[in-house]
Image (cartoon, rainbow, N blue to C red; front, side, top):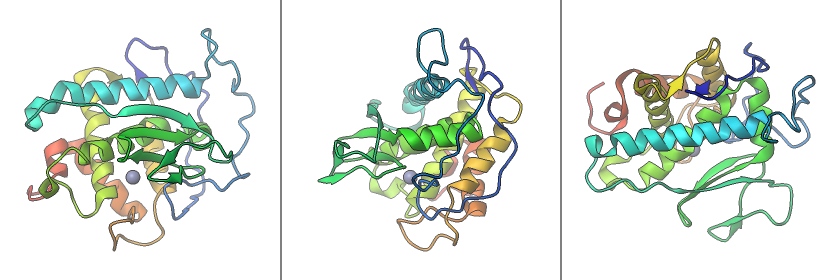
Length: 238
Ligand SMILES: [Zn+2]
């Protein structure tokens, strides 16, 4: 996946799906299980000294913000206010940022409504990016979806908040592709499906905190991808 006018993903990503992790929380990898990424420039990937992961994250933030900024007034009343992007943290250390009095979770990504910010564990992004660069786009667009939910009237927020965030992520990424701000490269859609599957619950959705199983996550994401933001809102005929 590439932000238009930004160099492509370098072809280093492994696009082939791997065995499912099926971790029950939003983060898939257990500490210490993150695979190494031999042959990939993990330290100094770019001419600007930033890694490929960091550049993809920046691109994901830019295209997601641009999508909502461009389309907000077509969809909702009031002006668009982007969340703050706190960026990476390392949940394994004591100086992890705090949300609602609790340190941010290790190997996870969050939207913290308390501080209205997005943040993600560096290891989660590295681990996922090694599976395919589309991972970081999904995570950013999903968490941004939670920020959008926090701005909507309660009646527009689905009880299945996580599945709605997936739907919004699909709407943003495919909407950005239609807008021409994001180009899909070969393997990206498979990588998105792989990421949704790896981050899914083992069991179907039953409770507000659930993410839903792989089929539900794929279905929600696909609905947004196909039919846009309004298809993610309650009361819309699907
Ligand atoms: Zn979520």
